[in-house]
Image (tube, rainbow, N blue to C red; front, side, top):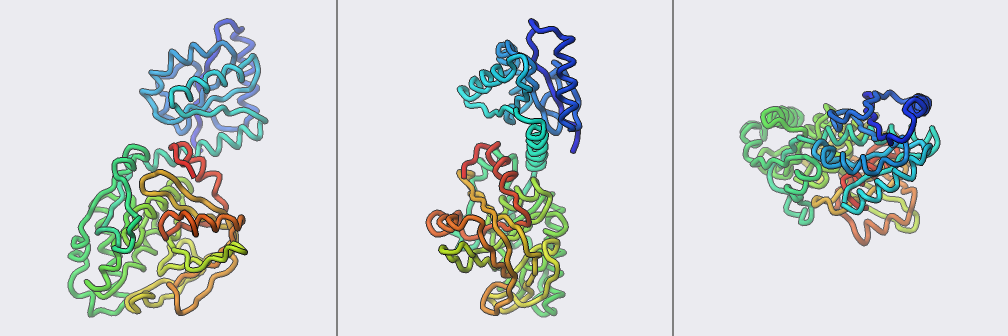
Length: 392
């Protein structure tokens, strides 16, 4: 983690020497790498994480005067660090109340040394993710598949709130790059050609990722994009199926925040009495599995599908709405992988930690595809999305 930047607010009524001694003791006790900027806010918002250390009471007016300048430098929430000494917590509460009255996000960071250090670590990860999202370009290669009647996105909202630009790319552009001969080639050879064509498009359009109307490949070139997506995700890009834009955005959140791939899959069965769910799809990133096998694409029986076996253990299920109105996140356990012939090739049986969350899938889902990732990541995901004003 890069050093965090700590700026200070101090009342002139307090003895500077005494406050400085308390500051040094408090900050060094946190055990985090920081750079103390003092009251020089000239580069506020440019570091990995900017904290305003409210050192004393009587600083509310100082903050109010600074606010227009700070808002011009950064649109991120204001994080108010306080030790609680010299009425600093009371001042922080007054400042945060003022921010909320004006529709400005903020948070007081206060508590035990261990809590503050952990909270700073989480916030630093969130701010790093926000910078990764800002300016990213994601391609929509072809329209969303015809059956994805709810899986679209509000491009302007995505640009304004996440900083991501969505770029429309005609499906024919990919088909032309793949070429005419794929249909007569062995399945793996053709699948590799689709991968090469998609890789070139990523480079040409300077994309951080894309989603593709992949079923069109079945008729156009008699092959699938499953292998290409498995490889490109493993290489650090976001590569989604079926033109599902909200799923792609959700995968991008996972990539930016955690630096890992996500598995785009849809529920096949749900047991609301036990909280056990089966997810399946015909591709999974190669860097998410312990081993994998090639098969055909399930629905068509042609091309190349991927049957991947992910390590059993804790997982998180996540989906964000395309209009950024809400999200869903749940933790669970991958209890087994299976390989039944009547389902998409990668199949995961997941036990939800809270079986009541099956209600979401039955009563208020965000489309059918959801993103599965290893580990319990709910706190980080919620922290990032809440910083953008999204609600679950």
